Image: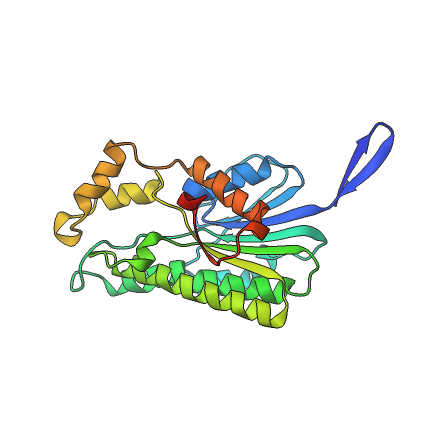
Length: 255
């Protein structure tokens, strides 16, 4: 709760809690900066490398989401107790993984991509429900998905399948929320194609492992990529206007 003096009177404003994974760069960093710009938001960022961002309402947690034990050990820090008006989890962290056909993938990469893209967000969703299901705050979970979840893209078997899993368990979580009256809104949000480090990784793929390489190079050359800041504004719009968005599956290009 924040105390604000105004013309001799004191007003109390309830804090909002916003938890963002993958906060060190790209969309995650843009989300942190956007939410921190409103001082009644308490923002917690999770990333492997950390974010050196100077804001009194930001807490930086260096956590490797591919390390299950590290995630489990830090759950109490990720989901603090308190009186909040809004509580939001944005599972933004994601990895494109090794871009290659089956037979050329490493076992380690296959394991890692599902730990980061599928298992970690599911664990965090589970803890979010456990921690806040009885909290009277407005509660929202946004899982950053991808249009790739609905497509067969050669070289992206891990990424596409991991995002497809995210979509399905987000829909199931919403059904369970409705059944149990948790009053939590769950979204799987496709963010479009964003100008981030992931796109650089895609453009550096080997042609024999990714037939759509030239198309993705063209997105950059033709300036068809959205900025992280533009997409962050869309994510916040969804959260701020969630009563207008009934479906679990959402796409920033549709609003």
